[in-house]
Image (cartoon, rainbow, N blue to C red; front, side, top):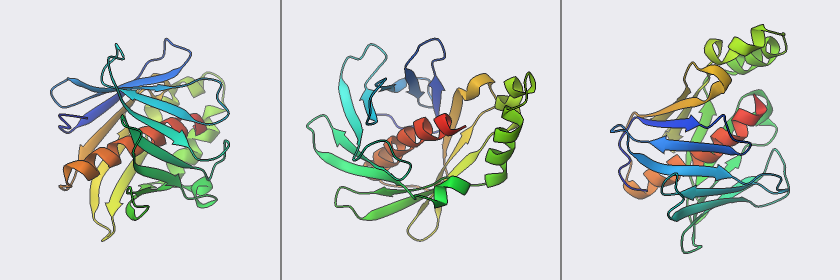
Length: 198
């Protein structure tokens, strides 16, 4: 992906059956169009260069059957694995937690939900008729990405919106281009997983 200028905005399409969203940089240019294949027993995500699907940039595939502890491998257009994002199993049931690892399976970054109570409140209020329509404005989780030294490098926040269709990624510290791309791709996969969980 080119022109990874922060903040980056992820905007879901709510008019389609598939789980699609666009990623736009600070200048408003589309840097990726993400499409999740429907009705697959394994997660299958395709990252295109634009909404016209001109070019496949990356694919993200689950390494096992649908499972809350699965890892998701990221492949470039040459089918070379460039990294993966892995959910931290049972620990993610309380508060979302993922690891982003490099192409050599070495952990590089940790993704953690900042406040588990936001998820709980969203789930509880989401079960109340009529009121549930406003949870997208009331409860907006933030996810922090930290490096191996514990320094926050980027933050991802769900923006107030109906159906939770807007997310914004902001940079806190500099990371190199290759890692930058891997982090953004990992967060794209994480958003699809977490959005489905509520």
